[in-house]
Length: 174
Image (tube, rainbow, N blue to C red; front, side, top):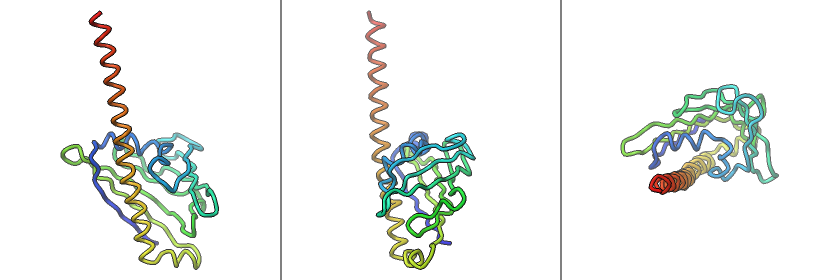
């Protein structure tokens, strides 16, 4: 089994980052290898909830059904494939864990832990060190994009809240 770990800090409070990453339907906004995500069964934000991710491959879309195995609101979640559904691109996903830690000055530490097994000869070739680096680069790019998308969402929400406050002030003055 191969284990990849990636960690980075983003300039947003943990709850803001959590609000975005915990909504798997928004995942395609920052995971460029994902076409869409949809809940299939159970609660979409609790252990036992099952989601279908539509992974973009050279051959087209490949469904990947995952189950939430751990859910600590605002801090951590873990996903694992349902049965043998975790084989994509000659790699069998075993588990992915996302951890968020509050840091000073409204920063959030994002830790991604990914476990996978190469499947077949092509999978073992893909497990070479330079390809593992490519997977890590893909994770890093996803976290970076997440940071930008979360910033845009936070700005939009703050702007809407400010408009609402302005309307309330105008109505109380009249």
